[in-house]
Length: 379
Image 1 (cartoon, one colour):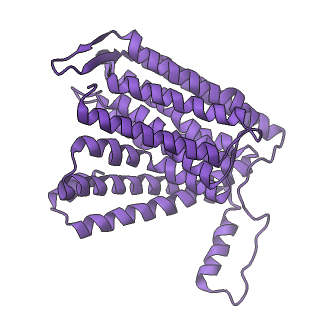
Image 2 (image 1 turned 90 degrees about the vertical axis):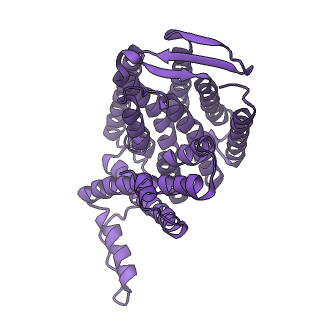
Image 3 (image 1 turned 135 degrees about the vertical axis):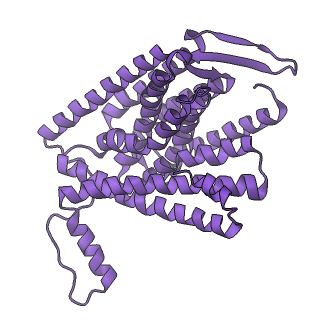
């Protein structure tokens, strides 16, 4: 549903847009709570780590907005121009903003398999994606009449096939790892579900009784599945409301340039599911979901979304411009940063220092983008 078009057509006022913006944030927060509770509960039921649930189910679910935007773009006759920016911009925000903010809230320890396999894999595919976009499909580079450096390459459809196959391999690996953990009965899930049904005090009020009912229902597998699916749907709906209402406020009511809106409101908005889910997980102590969500989402963005986008583009391929080179380089840097802090720290975790550093990197990245957008160093 495109709320932006609806709001523009009805001539929505400040009040309407602000109300919808606030409603979107409420839906994001409550949807993320349900989503995290359900995913963590499922992990405990399956007797696998919350990281595996985060890097698979949660990651794919929170990447749904990027996948929808990509498919909608590439199927257009002249589409395929925003796919790379959507993928790489989201990856940069996922690490520097979301993982950075989560690390500030709560220390995020990493398992040995995460440090030795998942993080190096993310670095490798980030480098591969950048190399495919720059060197494989051919490109035109040079300086235009304004003295700005220009670059335009194409990522062919068969590159998408390579990326998609790698994603299938990654998912198979995680499924096998989950089975191994389940057989070994490794109780690594940190979801706080009660061991048995508990009854509220007789003098408990309505909301307290409702809280007891919700905790008891988390013992049921079907209920965990329901709140996971419903929570994800509410998160995606809330993100759409926030993005569209904020865009209308910025463009129509304040008069901010479209390019600035794309680099801020839209880029931030498509990462809201990951942001709210990871922060909510960190706040609840489900650090495996918080870390796995971001690493898994970045892997899904590159391999699944990039792969599907390239495949759906057909013979045309997807455009890879100078923005793609910059975004790809920063995305690769982000993957190296989280690996370096995780391996280099004594606790093998991302703490406040790492979180603050990543947030500073985000500020530097956006400063670079805004300066170049204004002075035209590259296009």
